[in-house]
Amino acid sequence: MAWRIAGTYVASCSCNLICPCPTDNPPTSADGQCRGVGVFHVADGNLDDTDLSGVNVALINLFPSNLTAGHWKLGIVVDEGASDEQAGALEQIISGKEGGPFADFAGLTDEWLGMERGSVSFSDGDAPSASIIGADFSFEPLEGPEGSGAQTTVKNAAFGFAPEFRVGHARGHQNVLGVEFDGIYGETADYEFASEMAEGAAPGRG
Image 1: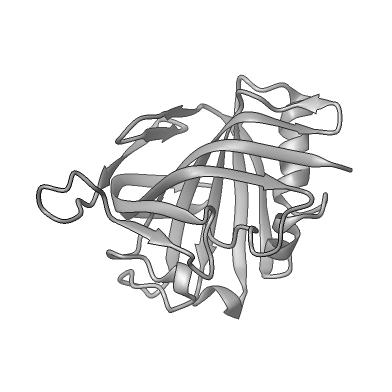
Image 2: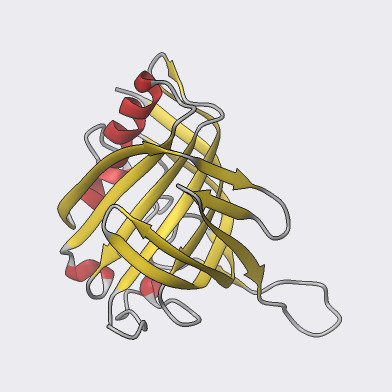
């Protein structure tokens, strides 16, 4: 079935700055694993006739080593304001059952942690913030050269939810789907995923 989701995401993980997952290097958290959450606001999207516009979904991850080593744990929390049909569609997409880039994730995932329903909020802007089941985090960008007004970005990474994303801090304690961590690293960007994507456009990081 055909699907597409597009919007803005903000993510937080336990790695020290800068998280090495986008370059397929070992995590830099204290225990050597990357625990994280990415909150995706779906500004526009669908799975066939199911409209997904306006829904917020959180992707929870545990990466025990560099990404291509596999053995991932993944799960999602879909905002309680979404319909059961919308929540089911997002689980089908993100678990990889509908093909496209998330099917590549499934090949690296040992355990699908399932889907929960709960409060998932997202606030856009220069410093976007999110809340998952009452636990908040806010993105704090790293500034570029003094006086430039620019912010630090990562571009053309081997693994990424967008071709270019802003990086910085995203502090906040999370305990969702059995994955508990204190956030340090953060990133944010606009994204677009679909069941059929151009070569090299697929996401590869959570």
